[in-house]
Length: 227
Length: 227
Image (cartoon, rainbow over all chains, first blue to last red; front, top):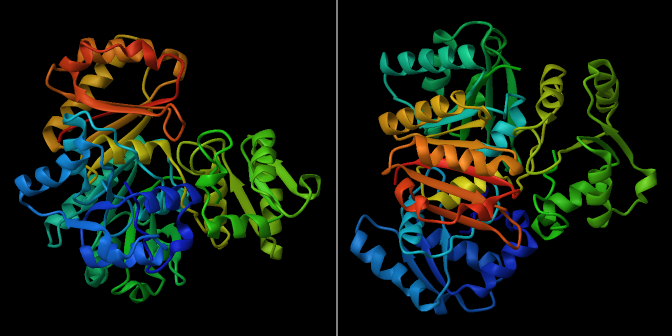
């Protein structure tokens, strides 16, 4: 399972081990073929990209099953997802399940993951945390969910992590700041791994005094927690 | 924040970017000085290890605060934890909090994390997951916690992740297999990143037919989830 760099072209985030294994692999199950080809080429794969077998993950389980069955004949298959790590918030998990059912060895390679790096950089507890993916993008549902996460966090100390689609960051940020308590600590981790990476954590009260329009249309992870 | 390789001596898991930054850094706040020195030496740091400033994180907040204040004078400080990534299930989180309070930029580097790699390799949902650290090591508390996690998982589909101290893996595994439903899927991710890495996911019923003594005294992450 190969993590695709989370910021474009950042091959420097791959380790020597990963590169070696990547270069030995010829068959790939991927989220988007175009991104995968770009990634493989940039990584300096010894084979011409046209000679690699790259298959996109689709909803067609029969097709995916058929592709994966090659692994039963001894062919290693690499899974590459769009950004971050395969199997975390993306379609790779089903291929992995298939592997476990068929007794095929699954080898995860470490790599950049926004969720994980955001948590590391937030200063919030890493002893107990929950990732919720995307919350609702409408009120009152979103406000209710945010209050529920805040409650859980205050009760157990568990860090709560969630995401939003970049062009909706404004709505999300506004809703957070009008819904949560002034004293609740919020971390917005924006453009992680990119040159314009911006990871800041403060109380809701202090965020209200900040310019949050800077996050508009940039990938961001949101975390609330205690320090 | 520098992730320390999770299996001994595996410098090959560091990326070119991380190595470059590591080699430019001269001051480190670490969990264990001995491990950090070994890691820095193995990474090929250009300076003799004796010339680096390596300070262990202690309970003494004044001491830590004093050390961290150097960063306000422009000195970069690297945080190195015992295994996996700093800030996740280890003392690095407090140093990061300090940084946020003092407006110091926190830069996380991707790296191996057992929790994360286990999740990737489990085949369970990465869309929603919770990490609980260590559960109780006694019954009936442990059974109650396991049933509670199983409930949450069945109700919401959220993957539940937890750990145990290696020499207690036997007790944990036994309790899981006698407490949870036969149909619940369990992943045991053992020795992640090491040559003897063993990551398998099956139903509780099938685990009952397996030899789980192989996990004794080896680092393992436990996950329950749906596929």
